[in-house]
Image 1 (cartoon, rainbow, N blue to C red):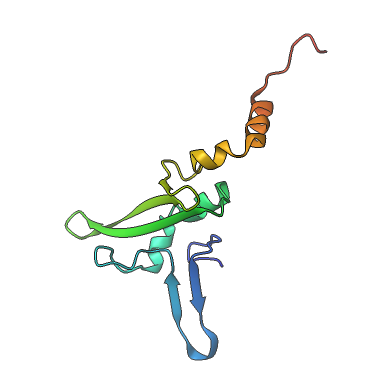
Image 2: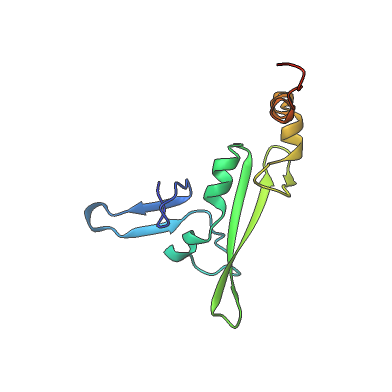
Length: 122
């Protein structure tokens, strides 16, 4: 579903059917530390870009919203976790290292893209 920023995000939900007015992000942590989600948070959220770059189904993304600078600024903190290998993911754009090691075809594709052409093959 398209979020208020105009990007496709599977965690955003809205329902205006028969008088309802529900807009929510189902990715924001619902704990006491996180601030409540606002539609303006979608402008700065990295989750849609990560989902476009990495479609790994075992990647779990969680966002928490914190108040910074005397409470005037809101900061989004992202944490990524691999459900399959039960480990924290350092770079969610790339994904889990163990998941990438299980797919050797991606390394062949990556090496083919970086391979330089021989100047003698004219």
